Length: 285
Ligand code: MF3
Ligand code: CO
Image (cartoon, rainbow, N blue to C red; front, top):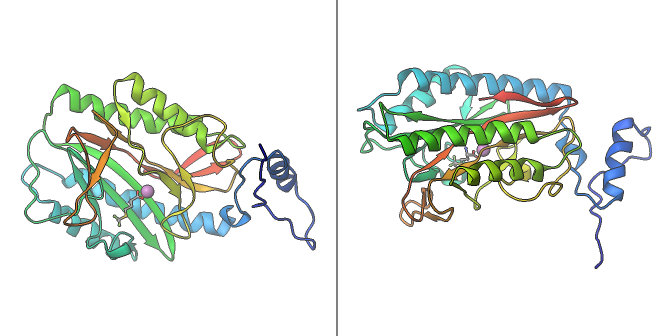
């Protein structure tokens, strides 16, 4: 079998070869998928994404304070819009590929990309993912949290907890000069050990200069596969974990809402991370 090396990491003839170049070229020459240089953020870009992440986290802190039974998801949308704009930023979802609102609100069997609505009222026992993404001075950040309305069933509580653990375990598995596949492998093991399944159709992603960049961060798979993790890369990990089967459906009417096929509950947590020489640093949560 032939092995095609993708020469993503180019070195310019005019600039001296750095220690980083040598390290990445070592992996590239062994046939590993390595990032393009443009995925390695500069100091200035990292500061910009960090500032965007602070606003993004602020939005989620506000939602955490205000969310309650009886509130509509449209009210969450207004809160997100007002806070974001008053901090000089733009909600990234608004008009993104035609998405009509400023935030995704995904309740119970909705896996992700739920559209806020006046008619959708939060009730006791619901679990909801609120997924917030912010553009500040052109820099993107992206994070989501789960909220439990009042008390819910022990099964749904466990799903929310295990999904959060999946994100934390995925974060620990990500090492500089490790691989994206190490993250997915750790997440899949933890989800399945707990009797849950990992959604396959949606993944984490590079982020920072655009909403969705390379690499794709799968939440399942094998160690040592996928792209090499290099300090300076910024990306999300955002496992979607289903209580039942991993298969999903997209709503035919709105073209956005993703639900579990078996209509059993689903949960998701997401942070934006910077890869450093020591491991991941959280830029938004
Ligand atoms: N925030 C989602 C993510 O984590 C993307 C939502 S796209 C939207 O990548 F258009 F629905 F907002
Ligand atoms: Co994301």
